[in-house]
Each structure stands twice: as structure tokens, then as C-alpha cells.
Image (cartoon, rainbow, N blue to C red):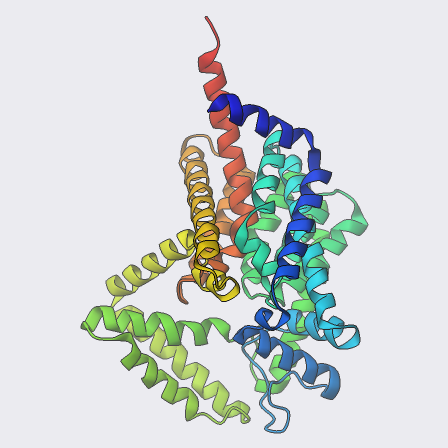
Length: 416
């Protein structure tokens, strides 16, 4: 078997980064060609569309212009991107840009690996892995925020590691865009900046100013709308509607749907056009979350751990069945996704175990990023899509681990 596998791997690696990027782009474009544009719109996609269009046309970041509901949950990054290119050009152009962005993220992955001490062949192997990941391919062809987030966040980190003043400031801007695309970006900046400081020193802090400025401008908007300083209420709403019902069901031995309907009633009884009522609802929700977790910490931990494991291992069944109606294709795609998810998880845990005895700063930061993404996503429900913002970090941690494992193996195989 190794006689076939070894020359195949060598041939792929000899192709270099251009071959990876061309392959990745062609695969994503092929996926777009064989699927229908109507399939690309999910519930979240429609929300992003309404927010972006209403902001462009009416100057209001809301899904309901006539009702005057100011948005406090969704962030502006992806809605603006979607509407800006979709309305001014055409919505298929957005998908084309996302395919290019997805391929560009693979280039960023490679350069981040080389920049942080991973051998070129292992960084290239990680790039090939991501190029063929079914979930990443499908997300590139869907009107969802993950592709934009991955490029802006990891691209921002690469800019900061470049050691050039202009690129460092650009990196801070990209961090700000990432944080205003997905709220996890606010926390991921912490290990990213720690890594940057460790790698390039004080120059990395030039990125802080544009990042803070962009986030602060959005907080000013929220303060004017809701009379309180915050970035997004997404975590509160998600926890109340997913983690809390599941925790109560686990603790009380009943169905989560019963509790979900109770909290849904809270939402339906709120006048969302009244900022004061929105603030009261959010305060009540946060209080309820603290109460439930405080009273049932073991049940909450069990729910959280189950969700975390599910997110790490989920093959993306929902999105796969959405796009591919033929059962045979579904199972092939799901099988590939499941195998790649398990290999990625094995590499990540290998990196974690190795870091306990041979810690490396950059690897520890990749692992911290993974923990932030999976930890925050586990307050929601199980969906492979929620793993996407951690994939680059998981691949780089895995590449480091497999590189060290291969090095130890080659030393053992040398004749004495």
C-alpha cells in the first residue's frame, strides 16, 4: 500500500501551492455549477439578505423596516458584503467571490504554517487537505458568513506576521471585519495577538488601533439604539434557546421542546421595536441562563460536552442532504467528511497531548483558537458548520503534530 501512497503524496507535494489553489478553486466552481442558486439560500442567508438590503436602501440595519426593529443579534459584516456585491452586481458574483476567498484562505493557511515554523511539505499537505474538504467546498457555494470570516480573520493574522507596518495595520482592519462578521472574532483576536507578539514583537500592536476603532464604532451604534454598550446579543439568545432547554430537559428528565416553547413565548411577548423592552428581555435571558447553569452545573456540562463532541465530529449531514438528493452521492460525501473530521480531530488531540510535554507557543495558540470556537459554539446545537472557523487552526496544529511524529519515526528507522 505504501508503494502506491508514497509516490502519490510526493506527486501532489511537487505540484506546489499553485496546484493546490487551482485545484481548490476548480472544485468549488464545479460544485457551484452542479448545484442550483436557489439551494444556496438558508434561513440565516435570508436574514443576512434582508439586513444588508435594508441597510443599503433605507439606512437601517433591520430585517423589518416598517416595524422599526433595530437589530441587536446579527452583526453587519456579512450582510453588508452580501448586499454590496449582490445588489450592485449580481448575487452569483457573491458566490464567485466566496469561491476565490475560500481558495485564498488555503493560501493563507500555507503561509501561516511556514511563517510559524511548520515545514513547507507539511504546510502543503494541510493545504491539500483543506482543498478537498466537502464542508469547506459547500460553504463557499452558500450564502453564509463562514467563508468571509475565515479569510478576514486568518488573513489578518498573516498580515500582522508579515513584519511590514502597512500590512500590520491592514491586519487590524481585517480583524475588525472578522469580529463584525462573527462574534467569535472578538475572542479569537486574543490568542492571535499573543501569537503575533511572540513572533514579531511589539510591532504587532499596531493592529490594535484599527481593530478597536471598528468594533467601537459598532458599539456606539448599539449604545445609541439600545442605551447600553455591547457588540452583539447573539450569545445570549442562542444559549437561552438551545443550551438552557437542553440542560433543563437533562436535569428534569423531560423534553427540551417544552422549555424551548417557554422561552419562545418570552420572545414573542417582547416588542422588538422598543429598545427598552429588548433590553429587559436580554437582561431576563441572561439572568435565566445564570440561574439554570448555577442550579444544574452537571447537566449543563453534559449538554455542553455532547455538543462539543458533536461539532468536532459532525460530517455535515444537513448541508450534504440539502445539496445532494441522490443517496449514493450523499453517502460518499458524508463518508469523506466523516473520515476527514476524525483525522483532523486526531491530529488536534495529538497536538494537544504533545504540547503537554513539548509546548510550543504558536501551537498552543492554535489550540486556544480551537477551544474558543468549539467552546462558544457548544452553547448552540450540533452542526458541522460551527467547526468551520476553527478548521485552519486545527489543520496547523495537526500539521505540527504529524511533522513531529514523522520526525520521531524517521529517527527510529535509522540504522545504528
